[in-house]
Image (cartoon, rainbow, N blue to C red):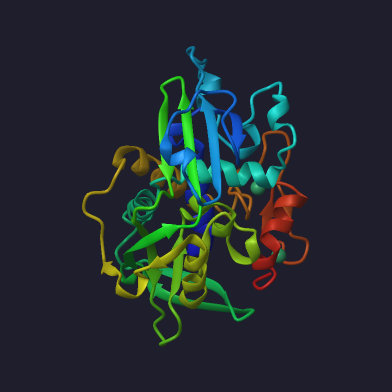
Length: 319
Ligand SMILES: [Zn+2]
Ligand SMILES: [Zn+2]
């Protein structure tokens, strides 16, 4: 199992059905000052010193038909139609960041559990192929899936604040206030004494600083040295060097939904030779056409030129 490729699929299927934001449309993004579409009274927002990003999402109030109910949530369908003037300037890359920034709130344990549910669908002896770019060179190794480690540590004084309000229930999710938070990632110790790779599937909760290799990807899979310097962009200090390491999570959050996500990813993985997916975002081929193929290796596929470009800094090392 290729860790990079399964991570692309796990994140796609997780985001597409995330219960807190299911079918929600983005109404407003605020980076300074006050919200226009809701009356928000919280000192966390008003008094924050760190850079702030606030979102207002709205779920539909009426019963949806079956076809709409199956439709995946995507960065590209997150805007209401017609697009409100407040949101018309957003680029696809910004929409992608905002989509994950809101959904990844409190998401790290969910992603750790999701990978565990997924790997539990395979035999114990299954091997993982880990591919990272280390000092600008491709580095690849294999380990047994059961050798992976869950790494839990604290982040103190986060360098950004995210607030997402979801209407009409007025649920509010805040990340990045002053208090320490626990963050969890997966480590893949290298067998040959080389550097361990770290997988942070919920990295975009920290905004653009959580983007993957060369600031393009929507999750992080990189050598631990690179991850340690990334942590300094997430927060002022951290306890990674004193982290708790464990083999398995026992009380996994949102287990029913995440098990279903894991099963869907397994279904797509099993059909990987015939039904491809976008190497950047994990989307399946659109109904009316195929995906674009990488002309050089003929083994990677993309939604469009933009997603091919976003994946290229990583893919070029393995193309
Ligand atoms: Zn794509
Ligand atoms: Zn290629």
